[in-house]
Amino acid sequence: LQRAFQEHGKFAGVLMDLGVSSHQIDDAERGFSTRFDGPLDMRMGTTGRTALDLINDLDAKDLARLLRQNADEPHASRIAKAVKSASLTTTGDLASIVSESIPKTSPPHLDAKRRSKAVARVFQALRIEVNDELGALDRA
Image (tube, rainbow, N blue to C red; front, side, top):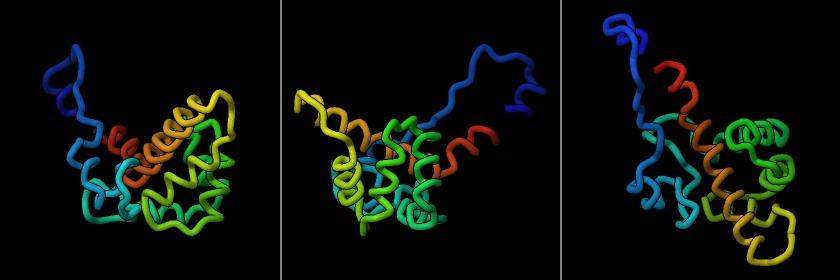
């Protein structure tokens, strides 16, 4: 972006592709999906540490910080403690642990929605970190 700015001056806007694609989410082996059980990978490519590596490398305090920083997860500490005390290897394991970590409220139909959103936020936070997405934005 700096080079383009130097060559062309001001911009009216910048369009960047920041998300995962549906084919990545639909492929359970990639580890992005909260719907399909697969390995806890979440890498955009084939090199680097996986989401499982990241979870194993962080203590509960640092994992909670990551969940707050990358996803504004309100139950970050509770989830991080549950994740660190569990034996997990798949996206299904992680989704279950996160879902079970969310305090129950009433009415029950709202619980399911809150749990689903928490699972999505945790997957988002891990994916952002595994792929250094914020660093990529800084370097763009």
